[in-house]
Amino acid sequence: MKPFNLEEAKSGNPVCTRLGRDARIIFFDKKGSYPIVALIDYEYIEEVIVYDLNGKSDFNDVASISAYDLFMKD
Image 1: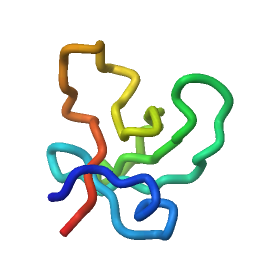
Image 2: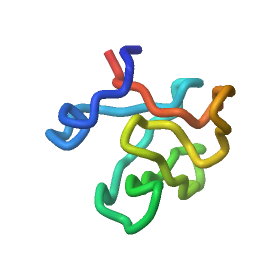
Image 3: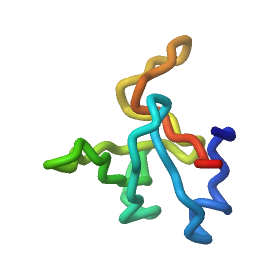
């Protein structure tokens, strides 16, 4: 996995979570501090998670990391 890159994601390059789950970004322009909306694949369901422009989930605080953070798939 590579660090999240907003421009690559907007171009349609594949994205996943820190744990390797597929993520499907559906919006890049939601109002507020977390403008990216993605669906995270859990085999039989998809979970909606929101992200900042750096691919950090709303489950983070400034000093922590989250299993939900976005990365670029190789």
